[in-house]
Each structure stands twice: as structure tokens, then as C-alpha cells.
Image (cartoon, rainbow, N blue to C red):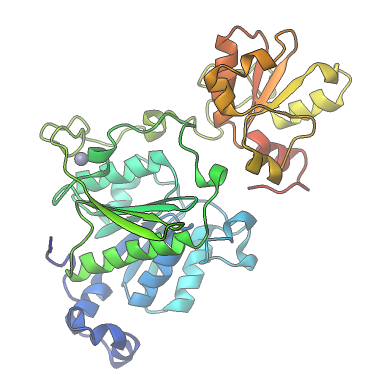
Length: 405
Ligand SMILES: [Zn+2]
């Protein structure tokens, strides 16, 4: 499906610009006209992480005139295995700041606009309205649905990518010409069911494969060349080194782009995806009996440390780690007993846990352990608490000598 160019050409290029972009100008399909369209283009990259890193650098090198970077995270050591826009000296800095500096060194002719915010339903329409196309480099379902819905409402293309371990997927969701993300995935998976890259890992170089395809699709849309991935889902398996393309169709019953949409404005996507926002309803506030939004009592890392080291019968507390062996190999809380979340789901865990002792359950960040806690509570255990913030909170607040991930 050939589409008209997304962007009008800019004023004529300078001699220096023509020299810089000569290898583009030489391609008949791009030419001077296409390069001027790139200069006039405004691309919003959401997430300066694994996918955003290659995408940002290639879009800057390509001469996209305005690049918006949305990210409110800071660079962490564990990001550097794949987030190549950042370097060692950037650890602890805002990702948007680090990325903007790197892009300026790649191509000072590009205007980089930093959005040091978490994009949400309150600001998304306003931010996205200032751009021609969105590149989704996020790693979570709430933001993915948010960007999809915002792009549908604004009539803009959403160039999407997703990665996990050795698998990558990419497509362009553009309701005006094809399906949107919700047409394929009307409902998010239950929280904790689909592991994130932070929990399950990702091959670093896979980000380059998928992020650069997203950048290529953005360039094609701007210039108006080739067959964009609208209505096609590209599926990549880096182990088989296979690339498959599936045809995907618009769903007339889609809640946001169908014939009678029920989603006509942005909603609360954390709520839609069943995710408790960090620092939100789950705050323990120092009380051992504070309750999360999901009705599970929580305990903070400090409180757990006191419990384990203090004189309040430490041997009586049963500490359970529901993560997998690869995660436990990175960092552990001393004394934790490994019972995988799958064993809670199958019912096998219940018989392994004494019901006459208090139980604290943890995972990486507190989401999977909340599910395990709920299962144990529903099985009738009288004293179950979920470690708020998981082992990450333990590393941050109790034992910073341990690695985080
Ligand atoms: Zn749709």
C-alpha cells in the first residue's frame, strides 16, 4: 500500500546540508524533495531506551528536522547493554538529557525537543499534536495503549515495536489506513502474565534490529515511498534469524477505531491494564498492615530488614521469592525460599508454605508477588505480606552493594 508523503518539503537545503545528506539525495526515490520533507518533519520518539536508542540516532543522522524525546527515567547501569544512545558517563542523568546531547553530536542541524515527563492521558494529546508521527519505544502496556488511542484520536501514525528475549515485532498502527493496536489486542494481558524485558531479559542487539526498522518506516512515511508496515505485522526471531510478515486487519468492532467506538477520549491506562502505579495506592507508609490497591497487605524493605534482623522472632518469618532462577542468580534476599509464581498459579505452592507462620512474598518489583500473595490469602493463609517494590526496593533501601536489574 503506497501512501502520500506525510510531510511537505522544507525550503531548499543549504550546500552543507546537501553535502551531509548526499547519500540520501542520490537515491531517486528520496532525492532532494524527500530530504526536504525529512527536514520539515517532526517525529516524537517515546522512550529513549532500547528501541529509542537506534531509532533516535538514525532519525537524527537522516536529518529529521524536529525530534521530540519523551522520557522521565534516568540512565541505569543495566541499560547500557542495549541503550546505545547513552554512555557510562550518563548513568544517573535523565535519559532525555543524555539522548539530546548525543543527538546534537550526531547532527547539530536537528532540533531536539525534550519532554522530561511520563506521558499520560493528561498530557499525551497535547504533546503528540505537535508531531507528524509517533515512534513507540516503550516497554509497558499502559503507555502502548495510551499512544495507540491518542494517535487514533489525532489521526496520526503510531510506529510500534516490541521486544522480548530473542523475539521482536513491529508494525504501523494507523486507523486512517489500517488496523490500530486495539484491533489486534482489544484487551491487555493480566498484569504479571507477560514478563517484561526487565524480568525476562532481552538480547541487546535485537533493539537495533527492531528500532532501526521503526526508524526506516518513519522515514518512508515522511517521504512517501515504498510499502509501509500498515496492516502488516513483522515478526522477527533472532535465534532462527527469521522475519515473517503477517497481514493484519482492521476490526470493525474495535473500541477506539471501529464503526461505533466506545473510547472517544483518553482514559486511565494504568487502571485499564490493572497496574498499580509506583508510589501510588501501595505505599506502606511505615505500617505493616498498609494495603495495596489489590487488597494485599504490604511490607517495606526497611520493615522486612528489621523483621529479619531484629529480635522479633526472625526465624518465624517465611520469606518466599517467586522469581525464576535466572533472576535469582542476579540478586537475592538472604534466607528467601524459591517458589515460582507458576506454582502459586497451579496450586502447588500452597502445600509448601506453613500456615502457622507469617509469610512475606517478593519478586522483582512487587507485581508478581502481589498475585502470589492474593492466591495464598484466598487459600486462607492468615498472615501474608507482599514486599513493596520487590527485590529492587531491597537493593535500593537495604543493601545497595547488590546488583540491580
Ligand atoms: Zn482499532
